Image (cartoon, rainbow, N blue to C red; front, side, top):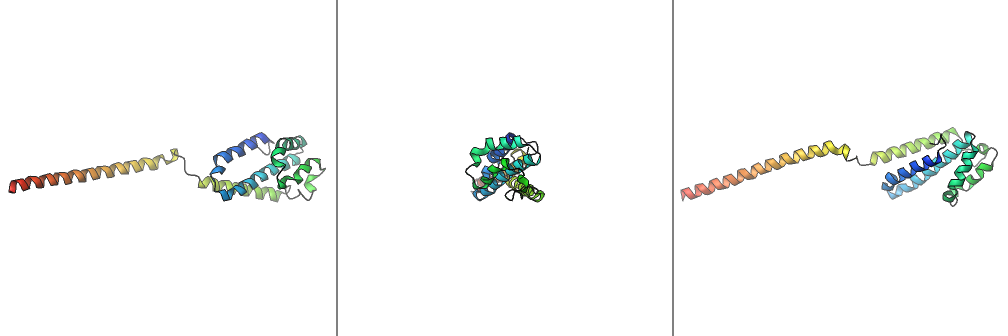
Length: 166
């Protein structure tokens, strides 16, 4: 979605991740989610600039200015559309480097891998384990029933013997 310059798709995907995955995270990890979201958005802007698509950069700031205006990380970014060579500006040079982009993508990948690994398995995937557990419990139940019946018959037999002997 970044390379396709699909801002709405990117925002929809992040919203989906927020509502389905990130809301379940420990509150200490919400800062990481916010930093990663900012990184994804910055990567989007950088990609638009690198692909010489100023219209998409302008569209980004028009649509996102309400959300980003009060955030200190984005203060300098509002000047980016007006700079002749933002990739050489000291405030942005790091974001245009292949090293930052690769490092960021690796961080995002690792974070998502940890999130997905910590999710409980879907109920459908747990079918085999649940089925095995039910079978084991039924067998255990049958064994207990047999023990009770045997105990009951033994008691009844002893009562009859007791009656006959006396």
